[in-house]
Length: 367
Length: 219
Image (cartoon, rainbow over all chains, first blue to last red):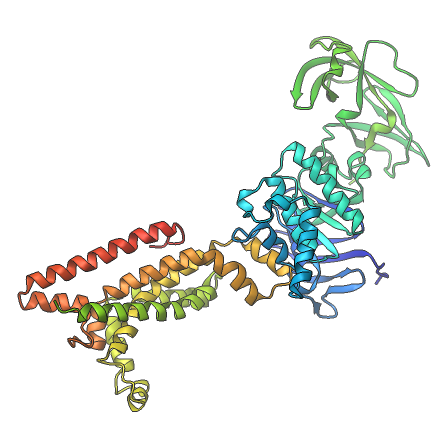
């Protein structure tokens, strides 16, 4: 058993689910940890196991050095004793209580005045003063979410669990709440574990990510490493890495990897622990630039492509190109801000030079 | 007009509804969100009075509560006989009303979002506290609807009451029994009045249940 550092969550869980066994081992320390995976991957099971609402078949959970669960030692603290806050997907506000009563609910039954001052503190912190006496159904979605946060925080948890916190909110509220959650985590040096299946939510909230699929931990790492270097092509697609191709890996050195793709040899500036042969590569559509038909700068891969269509997708636009040239026909998606597209004017049917930096080409590890 | 049947009915039905609540609510709590062989069996037994002829139920009660049964004999010695008393009428009516309250309460308890209870647990509240501060207040409307239904059913009880408590004017003669008596002796005016009263009470209760809104899906 490893040493448990004093401000961390350490979890090692084994749960026999109906469809598959769940095995996950991870840790979180004063940061926003996003548990990412498709629906039914076992994310909620992990959340409920941590909160003590479900008993894993085997494993160990420790929080700040306190053992909450240890199947070997027969320790299993009830949810009441774990000091873990839980904010479910629909916030779980008590509809028959006012906002203030909701926040007061988790406070221990000590002196009335002390209770009242703590409730007031959280009402002020979460800017709920005007809503304090209203019922949850009478306030906005953002205020409901803040009430749920205040209620969980007021009881002084050592870990906060949130199930898809941004799902029901519009874009503006999402931005505010993201700040709110980040501030809470920093101000109270509190690890927050967030479950989501939405890549955007994951990207906007995560410091660190744990990826789960069908009960297995697929990848664990910083947000950037997971989004830029996903462990599998399926995960890459899920995270928006929509350009996925086959390539030949020619050689892999200490700090470089050489591949042959679409008729040219490309030197990638990182080591990959993959043997030569057929490999899968991925390029994020937001890491490709569109230029005119001219020579690309040195160190950049230039690909000639005919623009097939332009699809506006809200804040940006998706461009679909057909790559011609020496290799077989390939489809390439490029994501680009709107407005910028006036210069150069993009016209379907015309050819453009697509520019990709070699470090943006990700070689998926062999399975 | 003789008001005795009305007063007896009111007392018997009120107490029967309360007794049914005292048995039915814990039973509903025990059965809610549980699926096992034993829960199904218990559920079936608790629902039995709904499909069993009231006379059959009355007969069982008569046999098990009568002076010849050990339980009945004990009560008799204590000076609290049940059979052929208004207390017997309460017992009979409460058994008949039990399924209505159990099913309403169960549906209402099951309709409470389980997430709310989980949140309450993580906030440090014991199972008992979660029940009384979250579950019961949120299920209350459905339970209230069950109480009203149980009262209405108890008010109309005839078969089981007749067998257990008899038809003693001024003591165990409830309104349905009094209507039967009035028709038997050709007192149609009396029968009309009492039928009208019972119909009005039933209508008022159904309207009030609709106003509670929820939790009566099973009926």
